[in-house]
Image 1 (cartoon, rainbow, N blue to C red):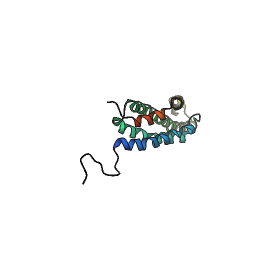
Image 2 (cartoon, helix red, strand yellow):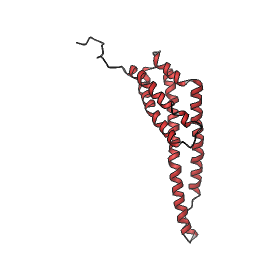
Image 3 (cartoon, rainbow, N blue to C red):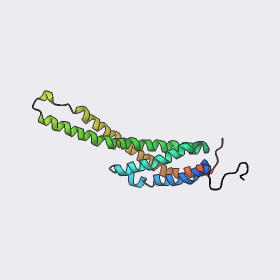
Image 4 (tube, helix red, strand yellow):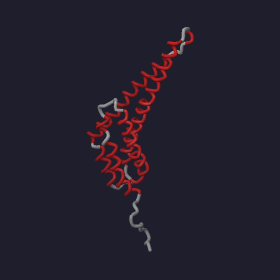
Length: 168
């Protein structure tokens, strides 16, 4: 019979499970950085990095009450980067779609003999330019964050924050 306060053999607390899982999720996420940083045209790799960051973010969010303020601060960093990667990916999806629509409208406009029947394209052209600029800005910001994390050894900070108990 199990005594008071004892766990079944093989079961882990949330804290212990986080200590086991988060380092692997972090390593998987950060291992993708070298294929992304400095290569703005690698949209697939950027998206894969984003997808690898989501389980890390969610696990950290779930486990935050079990760790201290350093862990919570690291979570905010992870959330910011994963969100930025997601917004960058949105641009990667929207820009080609907008370009395709622009091409369709331009084809249509070439076939119409009456100028008044043509569909204006300036707003779509401006949208594509804004999205490209936004994408470039967000990509460079994400690369800056990853480079800062490397120089500040954020991964090691996260690992340390998993070991020490919170002071609450």
